[in-house]
Length: 484
Image (cartoon, rainbow, N blue to C red; front, side, top):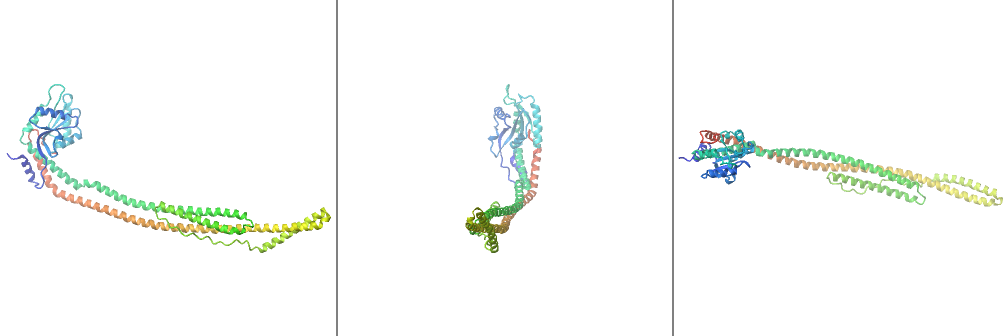
């Protein structure tokens, strides 16, 4: 008698001679498996007692490259099977043709026949190969009586005594092998394993381009906003300082004394220089904060700004006013002297000479006092006008310096930002080029896989059709006899 395994291999080799045969080795044992709490452990123990001449194993007792001669799929009579249970059948019988379904615990569930019918329909709907799978009821460890295993034991003995089991199991292994190769070809051609990577690359590419556009717009808006804010704040600060120093110096001018007259001009120039320095320091700090906020390089410190060019206050050139005031003061003093003289003459006629002397002295003192006071008031008025002109010149100077510094900072920051944008744009372009290159590689790999599928799939499909035709032919008793 010819070797059934070799005969099955020859059937496939006649169509595809370059396919490696299945590495699965058939083991002369019956696999008993099923979902958790279905009663497979009790059933395998009962079968070992009923059929000691056969080897019964559970799923964990088989090596990865071993396939059982037959498979017993055990489910509970409590409820119909689920899709996960059908997947368990697929795994257990992937290289085994003879499969029997067993509804266990029929001694405690009266509706087990309805459950069995539902299980048969659900498993047949899962895959056409299971349309002719036989189903039996069993009770491995009933509460009363002997185990109910006659139908299952009789079926297994017929299978194990048949002569076509090894060939059909080999054909089923070939079916699984060929279907796996076809699925691999189809998967590689569809790029299923590369699709996630391609999707991620496209998303990354869109993200890089969108990030470049958003960053460029946001940085330009931020720079423009920060510069405008700095210009407004610095201008307000400069004007505010000029106004405050104007009020301060005007108050000092109104309280000026003759002794401090010579100290006023140096003091005013020093205060104006301080204001210029304060405004310049404020500009340096404000523009430095803008650079820090935008992550740019701060402008280098500039040399101290020159103070505004101020003329000296015209307090010396008042000769005509002095002469006029002396004339008016002399007249006022003469009038006071005459009044004092008459007062003395009226009180004591003998004191006329003393009255003339006293009146003259008083008149002279009043004349000197009036001339001095009028001169001091004149000088204060001149100094007040000079302070006004000086602070106006100061305001013009600091406003011009603010405008110049802010414009220089805007130009420098814009240039640096443009250089950064160019560098980042070049980096983004390189990144997009790398992504595009990888996408082209994936497209080329998919095209090669499609070509390989188109070239290798037809003979594999032809061999699979022949194997399934063999399996659909006259089967040994109890074989599944249909294809996936």
